[in-house]
Image 1 (tube, rainbow, N blue to C red):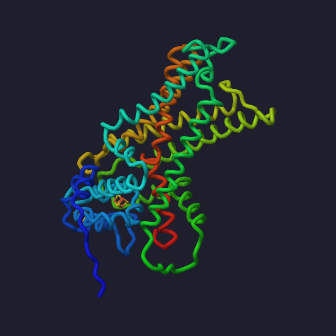
Image 2: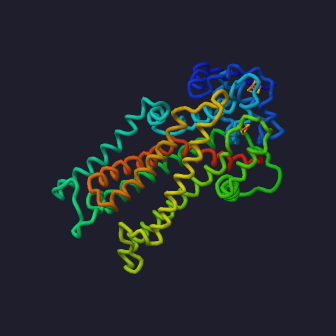
Image 3: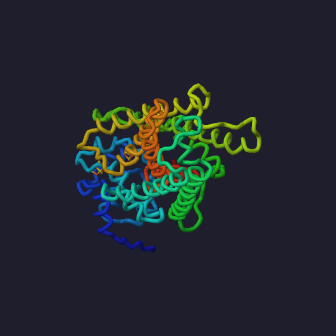
Length: 392
Ligand code: SF4
Ligand code: SF4
């Protein structure tokens, strides 16, 4: 008969408790949470089994558990847990710990997990953009130069072709590469020993990816399923609105960035499509950019309000949760303020605010693999994987 040796790792349990699952030891295995979860499949439901593994320190089991990623963090299980064990927070803490282990270099993940790491995270882009500023200022002979026609043009200091574009390209593709490696490791951890029998027609991972993106991003249908769970009487406002508005604002801003980049670089070859920056306020691409920025503020306000309104006894919000929200707030506010200062001809505040805007945008992209945005990528990859093997 095959034997399986359990390898408890008590330090893992302690780390999980520190990362947000501090009440996990309260669990007495009643299974209410597994019944309450609107997503848990009938065969091997969650999160009860994950609570056992977490409290026994079975790190290997949790690392290989694709179900951990099916959870949508709706919080129903925590609301109904009779022991206040907060299983939703334990599931989130386990996911955060796992994908930080997958993502190199791990030192960034450590900085990202507590407030004491924030100065390091800020210091790197602050110095980077200050060096860019200093080099251009020495070339221009002024820290706050105006364009030849007297306007405020940020490109006078933060010149797109040789600073902003290459720095953000390297940062973005570097983050994508780190995520790609992490996703490969995640899939290899899930891979069962031997051949897994898949019943029904097989589809490619690409078909499953499209289906996951439709459910999770385009329609946010899964967020409705969260609300279809049992009525707990304790739930905060629906996450769907804020989440959806924020995702769409990112999509609009990404589209605008792509159009401006195509107009700028493509315009060097085909002058008819050239786009000059700064764009006038009435230019369609600029209008779209400002709509995206306003939507971002709406989404942020809704998500921040929801987090503040959550029942603290059943849902914890740690540094990790606030980090991403705060960075996106800072990106949005500094972006809007720098535009306002530029339009009102406030020279020094415009450049200083734009400098901080670049610092925060860099923090958003460069640390993406360790932040909750990275979590979105890992979860999407896990959902694709489980669909490929018939579990969703
Ligand atoms: S986490 Fe709570 S609801 Fe779930 S099994 Fe443990 S005690 Fe029961
Ligand atoms: S947080 Fe929601 S989705 Fe996740 S395990 Fe609990 S009930 Fe299920």
